[in-house]
Length: 385
View 1 (cartoon, rainbow, N blue to C red):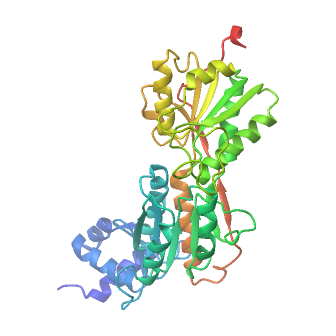
View 2: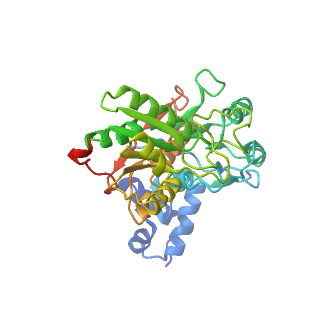
């Protein structure tokens, strides 16, 4: 005689509530029914808000050590993105794609549907995507605007502050006192990341250091400012300079774009950075290179100019997306990209929770990067000091 559906589902709830997360396959074996049957039961129980489901896992509605679960959307929610969390990230941005995957893991484990929107490389591209997601019924927003320059950032402040649903910025820290100052955000502490890079090079005896960096994102601008601050404050650093890592590293069509905040001399297309010549000119023995792709290309050009890494020049890359994949694996500062996404998603789930205290104060969270040492930086020879 077949077990009544409601009884079977009560048994599923009892197991999940007593043990926490349980694999669907384990439930099927314990109840002596098919995985398909248990998966269908779990989906129905999740839809009713009685448990949560993830990839092949059933979880209790409230984890003792975690935030309250967000109730599943009710039947009759609008079509399209109804009940979903909208994620908005720039196209062709591997750094932020890792952040996206971190957020996705948390949301899928909570049984929350995700509506991904990829913003093209055009000024103001995020706004119509967000408006469309909201019109389709999205109940929350995780967003990492491109913000290639200060002007594009300022233009987004007004509308982004008025979206009307819980919103968390990922890897973005708005200008103090702006309309978005009181918006939840989760970022890497890039000052600390640069501190790690300079500290590592100084500990190896390097006293003259070059930063070749981009200038076309909030991270790039923070990295440049942080390097100037850290290098200036270190008495061991005798000489430092900041240059563009690539001809296209400026924050828009070119240096004349309104709002351009370039430090150093912007280069025109067709005029790539001659890092070998710059190292000779400055007497520098080390370089910090942002981001990874530019770093790998610059290291290739150094080799073509007869400069070997790390024998002739020590290198620390910044981003650690592909730094380990070069012919010379690069020591790199690794911002906690996936953890940024996870923390942002967890904060958004907290905001969406009906539990008391879910509103609470605005949170501006910073996570610390790590230094991944791979051998592209070495101690300077005594006769070179």
